Amino acid sequence: MTVGHISNPVLPGFHPDPSILRVGAEYFLATSTFEWFPGVPVHRSTDLVHWEQAGHILDRPDLLDLRGVADSAGVWAPSLSHHEGRFWLVHSIVRTIGHPFKDVDNYLITAPSIDGPWSEPVFLNSSGFDPSFFHDEDGRSWLLNIQWDPRDGRPSFAGIVLQEYDADKRALIGQPRTILTHEELIEGPNVYRRDGWYYLMLAEGGTGWNHGILMARSRELTGPYELDPDGSLLTTRDAPDWPLQKAGHGELVETPEGEWYLAHLASRPVRTPDGPRCVLGRETCLQRVTWTDDGWLRLADGGRRPSLEVPAPTGVESGPVGPPIARDDFDSPSLGGSWSTLRVPATPDWLTLRERPGHLRLRGRQSPHSRFDQSLVARRLTSVRCEVTTVVDFRPAHFSQLAGLICWYDTSTHFYLRLTHVEGRGRVLGVVLTDDGAYGELPAGELATDDWPLVHLRARFDGSELRFSASPDGTDWHAVGPVLDASKLSDDYGDRLRFTGAFVGICAQDLGGTRTPADFDWFEMRELDGRQ
Image (cartoon, rainbow, N blue to C red):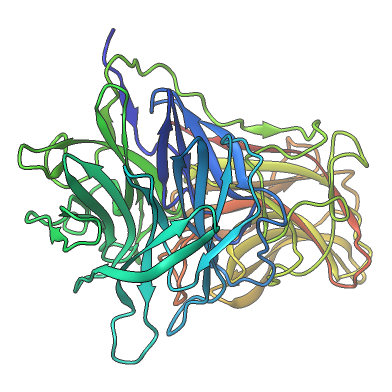
């Protein structure tokens, strides 16, 4: 059998902080979701090459309450493990970001299967984010996370802490111990045991251009730990033109044949006059790794930089990787797994696929600046060269009623092709935007659409350029508004802390509270070519 290869990223678009786990013949990848609901998508594979979504773990309101959380807060860095026949998921819910404080709670849930049912959350601690569990050979379980320090004049990242967990008591026991501090920012701790050593894998340097992965080891779980004398295992901080940037935050998995792979995040920048920007956010990649004779981990192909293609496990052929489903005709009674909503679950009072069969009906609620009750449903952007199209039946009678197609980063930055009502003109289609917190309306290129039976809406991404257009019949297209800077839909734009990625979706607002409906017949996301 020909040895195949893994093409990176294996999970394109916004899929940061990957946690990888093998149970039997299956591999699982879980990733962060921040303010999006449902939380923590899980993808499964039997060969590390082909991945399919297996649902979301935090898919119930009792598991996830995000109303009011800040942009880029919410669910951070979930970590999967398997112990005593059950899947464990530990994750952070961050309520406050920025400086000096991080209000964060860490929770554990367990299930007999990756498909659930997942238990009620067990509160663990609030000392810092990026928790993970290590289950030792003696049966004891240990929680690791970072210690956050908000005091003036102190490093915010105050070290890696370790504390034992008692499953019978459903609580941490004993006192937390700081097992490693470092002059560089360190987070994302994970422990592995091999050949009598405890290996500590760390994310270093923050999750931006300086990101990387660092290893340390000790003969005792509690330390002291010695750092890898060769420095970073993985980084692109010294290679600004490398195609996979911001590489870091990883976890390890071993195949049944004894081969090792590293799951990590990375970003593919778009080059702009203002510098590189990563519109697709932080994506999930895999690298083949090996252990040296003196017991340190190295990339299998040498160096420290992530590869776009790596060898698949022994005996695995590449085969075709199926493209994501491009079109949703809304014929199902429930939303597919590729859709996400902001902060709150999709409930029939504002989103339904049953009231008008073959359509997704959105009832307008709060504005695009709200952190509470938006009627917005969206999909991850997975290519910066693609075309997104939808068609809507919407008859606003007041300027407070809006609906349309939205290209989204967060409440502070988005582009919105929206229908609304203007006194004396009737139904009007135009572009409004929020640019790093500043709201604006673009009257140039507005279209009067009162005599259109339906309104087809289109967003075309081409690198850093975004163009909106509309059609009454899906054939005769008209440009709406100017060419927009799509690269602003990235972590790398603006002055705020931002950690997510670009989404494209549909939404409706009714600022008068009458919940006027907008009916969408279908939604299609189509790549323009085979490139990013």
